[in-house]
Image (cartoon, rainbow, N blue to C red):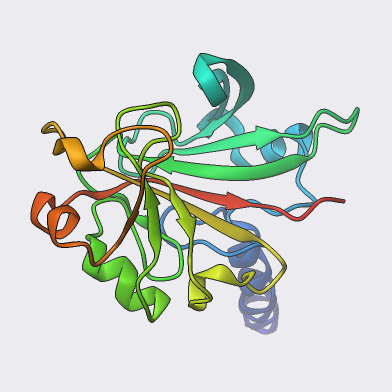
Length: 203
């Protein structure tokens, strides 16, 4: 009886520690979870096991870079992790893309599929978006001093991209075009968030 009681007490003490090391499968993303700036290729593989696979990830201007994909078989949980070019292969940030209609993850209350109005509410004011249908089309270029312009707890910054399956009006197209989030034409076209990046501070 005493032995059983002691064993039960030990389980209660150990369980919280085990829970803290269990990788999250959804929820809010922070600078520390589910990936942190101190993570390396090795630490992520140790923590996520078969749910972390190396793939070619899309980069700027059609280039690709090696990185980890977490939860590769669950499109609504998928997270892409990029690495710095140093020998330690430290994580430099993570990206959510519209690989599914929705994502189980969120950043600052924003998730894949969030509307212009959703993001403007989170920012606390209108912001600027780059013209569409080119390599950097649809990215937020200026938060105009809103809430999302500052770093998150831990120093991470956020990048957000908008798009829509249908073609954009001509006034919203091209490099050099900048459109306010409350612009009537943009609001009517109603793009949604298709990509969210969390960028870790430089070491």
